[in-house]
Amino acid sequence: MKKIKNILLLLAAISGSASCKKYLDIVPDYTPTIENAFALRTQAKKYLATCYSYLPKLGEYSDNFTLVASREIVAPTGGVTAAVAPAMQQFLDMAYGAQGVNEPVANYWDGARTGTPLFRGLRDCNIFLENIDKVPDMSAGEKRQWAAEIKTLKAYYHFFLLRMYGPVPVMRKNLPISASVEEVQVKREPVDSVVSYIVQLIDEATPDLLPAITNVTEEMGRVTQTIALSIKAQTLVWAASPLVNGNTDYANFKNKDGEALVSTAFDVAKWQKAAEACRVAIEAAHSVGHTMYYFQTPVGFPAILPSTKASLDIRCAITEDFNVETIWGFKNSKPSALQLLAIPNNGGSRPAIIGNAFYGVNMEACELFYTKNGVPIDEDPSWNYAGRYTTLATVPNTPDSGFLKKGFVTSAFNMDRENRFYADLTFQGGSFVYNTYMKDLLYYTGIGTATNDKYSMTGYWPKKLVNYKCTGDNNTRTIVPYTWPAIRLSELYLMYAEALNESAGPSVEAYSYIDSVRARAGLKGVAESWTKYSRNPAKYTTREGLRSIIQQETQIEFMFEGNNYWNARRWKRLDILNRPVTGWDVLKKTSVPSDAPALYYNKVNYYQPAASLRDFLAPIKEYNLSVNHNLVQNPKW
Image (cartoon, rainbow, N blue to C red; front, side, top):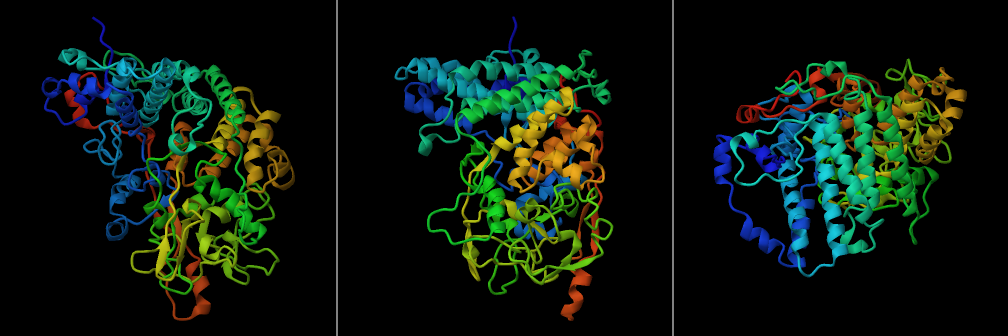
């Protein structure tokens, strides 16, 4: 008799039991509990919340490993970590090459070492779907809506596991408690099969979902049609990407019965399907009012410089709760400790900035930001690329120099960059825009002072993650949390441009969606910027050139949000995963202030990663393979 796979029983091969049979023996009879859980609407709603509770806590520094794994945010290991951010040490171990098969970091397969137990989440989703029709005091329409929400969560949890591990077992239904050991020995399904199931779930769910949330106070964050269609778009873009679309490195990646798990033949139709899914998701988003975010000055707000407005356009797209650009916000983790790590600490100077200051920004990631002309720093002939690390510059006394402190001596590296460079980063001489100093800008100054453990090892902090509504001065501070934007409209725009380019080459339509993202950063369009300002003026006219532009635009736009970890893997970009960790010589000290800039602004190489083919997929815990003999490990682990 055909039994369909269940996560709990897959977890029998994943969770700490001595054998599959023993695990089955200790599974309790859920019947009385389940009957009670669906006896009334109020109880069923609690179970609905349980299914939502497995959403990863992306706004928690101690849960979201991608913030560090992307090699954008960096920090030293050892004592400083234990003192300021103890839960982060394992992520640093992972980033510095200590990931392994015995106890994998960020283990979403088992729900260990900060990983959410997504297979358990899938099991609870299946229980919900099996029982929601039994609730007596609900209308048929509401039952369909709730079931559609859970189907979408099932799709998302499968998608999260898919991009983490590649081919995974599909949890269509729960196995009965009477299932045999052989039935529990589930195997991984091919990528194309997993993708098809995710798309099937979304297609089933979408008609019964609300177009948008109407009860904003109580229901924001619950699944809508636009969210479901966005997950479908993400899934199909991932499935069309080089990692799993024509990747011959996975020619021998097979189940034990010889079934191939990844297609090694490139199929352009996958990009065409991805483009269509992105188009449909964008249309759905527009139909309910989603658009690119721009800061709207509140009533009574002090007059601010144009540069401050430009900075808030960018930062508040992240930190403004459920703004018009946010398609899906995760309410389960509102960044508080994470913000403290991103706020500098100037050691008690007045006025003081009092953060934990531990999050540094990899200088190699800072290189990605464009010049003020909207092209890469190595393509703009007007920018001093050769002397970017060795030349000092003085900030001019211009009417609106709100990004930088007038007269401050800094590195040429920090001069004449695009708005996102100044909005996303805090550094010596740069403005730190937050509520206490909104009118009279506060600039972070002081060269090379490391206060206890509270400093950036590179000289840069991810200001983008800090809500401008935070307040603080001298010995007090108030952190204002925000809802983490898991999906933004700008992601759909850039995915659509990417899919259009990969399926049919450069086009006016592809340019227009990239340009919509660039406009918020104060940049001209792709065609105009490259034609006027780049050493390679025709770059945007070829598929390869536009691919490079889209990938860099994506990395800049989603810097510090974790997306770029997943992007680097699906693009099969080892150069991103192997980005060295570099920064200024922040611990250099001198008693002669005039010497400080020349000593401080020397680039230091801290660490060189050695990522390889294996790092495109996460390892499955070795113990699971000994329990479930049908499971195969990911390549090279």
